[in-house]
Amino acid sequence: MYHIYIYNTLQGTSVKLNKQVIAWFIFLHLGALLAFLPSTFSWSAVGLFVFMYWLTASVGVCFGFHRYLTHRGMIMPKWLDYFIIFCGTLACQNGPLKWVAQHRMHHDNSDTLNDPHNIQAGFLWAHMGWMFYNRHQFDNSTRLRKFTRDINKDKFYQFLDKYFIHIQIALGIVFYLIGGISWVVWGIFVRLVLVYHATWCVNSVCHKWGYTNYRTSDLSKNNYIIAILTFGEGWHSNHHKIPRSIKHGIKKHEIDLTYYLIYGLSKLGLLSNLKVYS
Ligand SMILES: [Zn+2]
Ligand SMILES: [Zn+2]
Image (cartoon, rainbow, N blue to C red; front, side, top):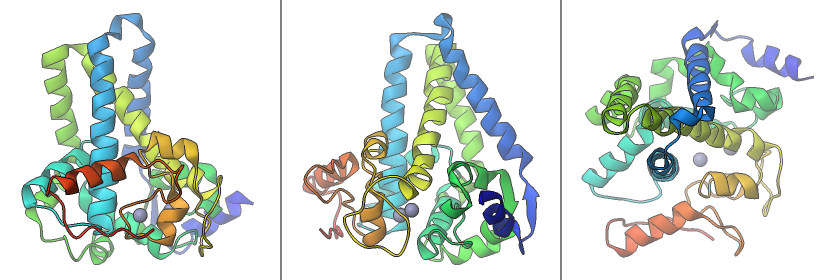
């Protein structure tokens, strides 16, 4: 059944296999395997991995790219905006403009042929297969810009969109100079692969397995394991119900670490106009 959905998904659009993206993912996964060599292990590298996992996944992607920039759930000073969006760019999932555009497409047409990672085309498609193709409908820059009219003009975001791979390579060089090869293996390869799969699980697992608190018009689910791995993004059905709310965990047991960070920063006076709906 899935191949019919994929066939339909790829129909009617200009589609090209994106060999660069496929090669990049293979390269990173092979690099991450180096972590199994005892010679690449060091406690400082593991510490760096844990810190960078949190900084790029929770601060950068969940807080910065998602709850702040995509859904405009709060207001913050420009210096903090640029800092957290830079952290999101270090997750190497495109720059902020393309990431936000594709995520807004997902919310507008969840689980349909107009959803970039339509779960109806299968688990693997929603997890990573959708990125293996360059599809006019989802990758054309003119079309993408229509979804990010509010932020298109920002020069810093434009810079991050253009150079996110270069920035990652520069970070790798800095890690190498400070901590040697073990810092590159754990701080770049292992971290990127795990942050990738955690983020991708929101698109795949959280549209397939879990529970719902509310009726929604899509297949989104709350999933405890993914919520832990993604610092709260796994309460995905709650999020689809009220996309603008910065608080994804609603029930008492729904731990939402990114929200706790946002709450703390707001108490320090760094954030305002918080959109919280329970
Ligand atoms: Zn979703
Ligand atoms: Zn969202």
